[in-house]
Each structure stands twice: as structure tokens, then as C-alpha cells.
Length: 228
Length: 49
Image 1 (spheres, rainbow over the protein chains, first blue to last red):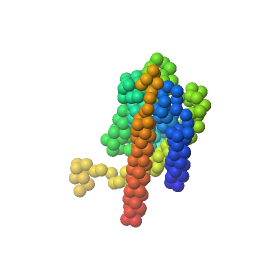
Image 2 (tube, chains in turn orange, red):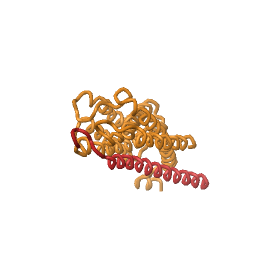
Image 3 (cartoon, chains in turn orange, cyan):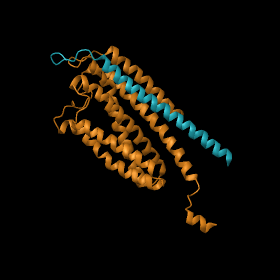
Image 4 (cartoon, each protein chain N blue to C red):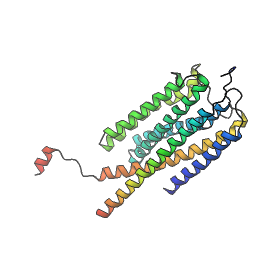
């Protein structure tokens, strides 16, 4: 638990430093002006969202191979954190799109593929709420996560495969060196925050799972009659 | 926009950073609150047994 809180504190400190540099020290971009500063939160959120999706995907595969419920808890944590990040990604993207593209949203391949994964993960989280049997829930959810994660390479390559409105991937090779520092500091800030969140959420899932396992089995009316 | 250059826009920048901060803050607080509830529940169950 202390480790998780440590990661969160470290993440917050890095985000404060990175955002300060991004907002007040780094120069404005030539064409986008001040609006480009949104990149310092949007791009780190995007990178770490992809990592969270990969974590949920990896945990799903690990669960199907081992049937260890610890992997199911990790998968649930990865799913939820990835959903939060995807939601924030869409909000930040919309706010950036309005002054640069003139619209809040466009059915561009990159935006659409992110939205598809966001709703797929929301659906899987809803599915987990409706299935009472922990074993069945874990298997269904793992299979659904693996299927949904097929969308991740589409998200990544969408800007290369289609000549879309969204710009190419932002990385140190595609942005000016003056923008590297706040981008990197915030990327690590969001990474540590994500690790802390996943650790706490995994712990929460493990507590709930332990409580479910400890519950007495549900007895139907017929079985209750037989027992009596 | 003038001549392909975005003028101003600090309001959008502040909105994006605020949404991100609020998102992380609400999720973090919700997570810690739920975890503490579960921990106290587990401790209470342990006491009963």
C-alpha cells in the first residue's frame, strides 16, 4: 500500500513540475500558439492509456493460462484505469480540436477507434457487474478484453494507415526538442500515477473477491426444502 | 484563427488541464475511500470470526 501511495505522490509531483514547465517555461508553438500546451497532458495520457490497455490484455492472457484470480483482479484494475484514461483522452482531445480543427469531435479514424475501445471497456466493466459467479466472470471478461484489445494496434496505426485529420504520433522524433522536457516529465508523472492507481485498484478487487469467496453459497428454494 | 495561426487559446489550455486534474483527483479519492471501506469491513469480519 505504501508503495502505491509513493507512486501516486511521485506522479503528482512530476505532473506539477512538468505542467509548470509546459505552461510557463516552454515556448508556444509557431502555428498552434498557446493551444499546443495541451499536448503536455494529452500525449502522456495517450501513451499511458495504451500501456493500461496492454496491462489489461496481458493480465487477461495470464488469467486464462493460470486461472489465478490475482490476474483477474489485475485485469479489472487495468480495465478501469484504461477506461478513465480513455475518457480523459477524449475530453482533452475535444478541447484541443475545437480551436485547431473548428469542431469538438470528428469521426476521424483515430478518434473513432479510441471511442470504440472506450465503449468496449465500459461494456466489459458493466458485464463484470452482472455476472455473480467469480470464475465465469473472470473468463468472460478476460476473453472480451482480449477481443477488444485488437483495436489497440488500429488506434496506434490509424494515423499512418489513413490520411486523417489527426496529426501523426507525437514522440521526441516528431516534436521540437524545446518541447521534450515537459512532455517526458509529464509522461513519467502519468505513468507513476497509473501504476499507483492500478496497485490500489488491484488491492480493492482482491478484497472484494476474498469477500465473495467467503460468502456462503446461495441455496435455491428447492434445495432449501430438501435440506429442511 | 488568422492566417492559419491559432490566436489566444489559454481558455482551452486551462480547460484541458483542469479536466485532467479533476479526473485524476476524483478517481484517486474514490479509490482510496472504497479501499478504506473494504479494509474496515475486512477487519470487522475478522473480529466476528
